[in-house]
Image (tube, rainbow, N blue to C red):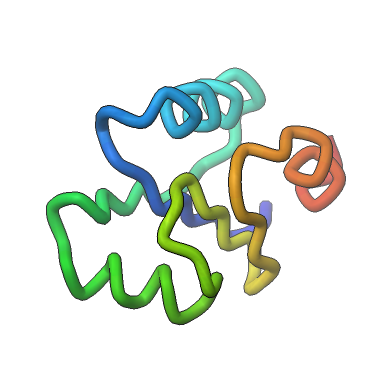
Length: 77
């Protein structure tokens, strides 16, 4: 199983859908709330070049936004 992190906020509808998608596909992931952690927010901007959420980090592959097809391809599902 690949290491998956998702940088998100609790109120972002795309983040909620993205996390639900991961759960439905039994993907274990680390949920990083960038609204509550400025250091993690800065980390997200550094790796993605973006301030928008969600941002996926799948074994170092960065996917900005909930691009379901890109996530499925990267996870092999």
